[in-house]
Length: 584
Image (cartoon, rainbow, N blue to C red; front, side, top):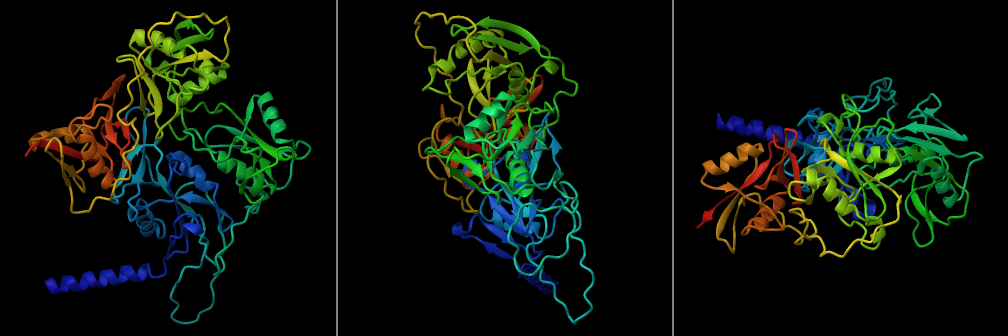
């Protein structure tokens, strides 16, 4: 019986090897990002590395749609649910084998009310669901084969008509395409779907053509009879209440910029366009007719793309459920004139009158104001910061309210002020909370304020300190860490031992320990080093024992990502965790 099982196992292994015999992995930095050409002929390309190279779930889809392979757009790759072609082997080779966490193009699930959780594969090969606004790696798959799949043909037979290529499991349906030639195709632009359009945009030159992005913004190309220099193009968009569209946007709300600009300028029109990035060394950013970004002299007249500043759909963030459904009108709770001469207004009211971060930002923009900062995000420009800290503290803190504020996004999280402890935090962006708008300019002379002792800066979030250097990969047979200073034993429960936050706490207690804390600002023993070593080394996400955040009945629990960055997310997801035990 055992012999039979071994024979079956060997046979299965042989079949697996045969199935991937024609697959090719390209891992040469000089040739671009790591890629995998599967036995199915599709090419899979990993996007990873620095934070600027990673995206939120929605922006990963938009990024892939802007990458042309074999003359067609790419799509965000699925993994197992459903598997498409050689997707399982490709994701394993590009993500799991490299200990990377990657977004997947699979079904989403619901978390807390008004929260969507998106699928990703962990470094251990597990599919989990987490908040959609964190930035992680992802894999783009060509929507058609780039090489002819190797199919054994026992004997010559009449060539049948080429079968239509199956449409991707997600995204817009594609018309059937003939089988490609055996040689790899060179990416081309300006392709048509046969009806004189490319992804719904008319082909050929035009004075204007538009694209309505999935991010709710409208992108409009200005070309024939409308070309301008870089500064003229930027001023033209601004005068129309729009903005010159950027291209390589790594911000939280990148939206469809890369896809829309490449579609309007390169793929459907084959023209060069100015881009909204900042000039460098006296040269201005532009996209050439092949869809590549360059910097050139700013005084040449080129086409350009303006986009709406406020999403037309009024959605809180690309891909999230539209918070305007069932929402109440914004409610003015209080206002004050700041010492900087700006007027600050608090919007609060009942739960449905509050907004997600994106909707709060857009509301302030729609009334000609801006979301107020709280931290000094531009120390070189104290005039911009103004009286923001005092205003937010007075309006939100005195009422014990939680409020959005304008700040630098880290890891796909948004800046939030807690009136309970007068501190700023980074949290998930899809919560309904209050917010403060302020006028862009002073509406009254600034009042010289007395010089009190400086107010204390808000304590940093648990992950605010600088990194402690690279984290070595944890060997698969190592799951414990003994603190050199506190002598405590820390054990990582990985593999199939996943729990939600409450169950993880209960599990550690039942084992005679406690869920390990992780607070870089106020470390407890060797807990920070232990969590970095175990969770970061295993390249997995872990619950940690810090305070939970509750807003209108929705709880958000503390966790660390595979990069050991602190987040607060829905407490019901099942992930790994570290228990801390007494000193030996």
